[in-house]
Length: 161
Image (cartoon, rainbow, N blue to C red):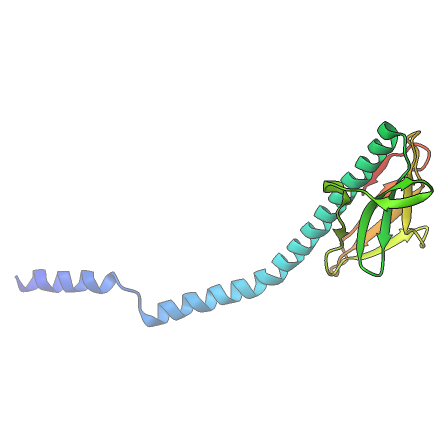
């Protein structure tokens, strides 16, 4: 009987973790999270850059299609001071903001810088014949990831690189 009690006591001791084991697990998890957090931040910023560039490419394709179907001149306008892009329609020699889903301001996410080729690109026009102004817009995040949006003038082809 005494031997049975000793075995039960030994089994109960094996079921619990010691304080040292718990501290060791916490230390390992904190080291792993310290290594993983910067990579996750980099991943998130790159994902945000890709998403924004994709949205802007879709907007450019929409403006091109609208220019053709509605026989109007549309503009993709960059407001450097307030850090956003927006879509505009030429009405009576004046550009006006369009309404609806595509008429909103496409805010540039924090940490993304914008540059262009030519450098002073602030407006890209889309014409009823399917052509557009030629421009390349570069987007770069703080980790150096870079994506470009190229619009070919004569063909109106829109590419994301």
